[in-house]
Image 1 (cartoon, helix red, strand yellow):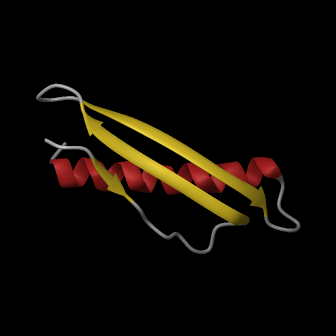
Image 2 (cartoon, one colour):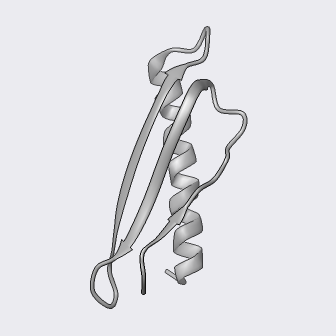
Length: 72
């Protein structure tokens, strides 16, 4: 399998200036490596911890989508 990227817009997320990339690369015939990076500022009135928590949910949904696509 070749490397691919999943890009997804997720609204509403309590952050601003949000940019992220989730990259999955095949490692061997039955393993993958996932790299995730994000930059953001919490939205006004939102704590950094709450913003991070919302983004964790975003990434969990991305990983679930990848697992579904791969039949895992």
